[in-house]
Image (cartoon, rainbow, N blue to C red; front, top):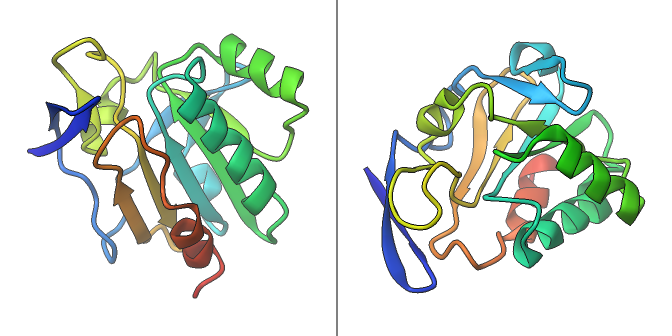
Length: 168
């Protein structure tokens, strides 16, 4: 079991956060058009998973903006912004912000995603949501970068994630 903090208060997470060098756990998420997005459908591309609690918070919104700016133009890369938010909420945000270089995905129909990726919050005010994390998965489906952000209200290490996407 992993632990992070939310505004300094410890929060236990369930599941096992993937480590670099292992195959990424399979997933099925709800895409912005309500279709299924699976890890298998992204094979052959480098994938950045930007996992966060809710698009309706400043830090989560900032991460979507930052990865849109820093990673969306990279060749053979898919940036997948994942939360429990309904696809309509992330769609409205991205439309209002002019963000079209990232894909949003929701685990509202597949809550086992948060458990499989070790980011499931089952206690406190954010229960039912995911902790903040970034993972980079290579073309073969192997995790090459994994950051579970220690304080949920902090932004992820953008530079490390982008470097992993670029194979550095």
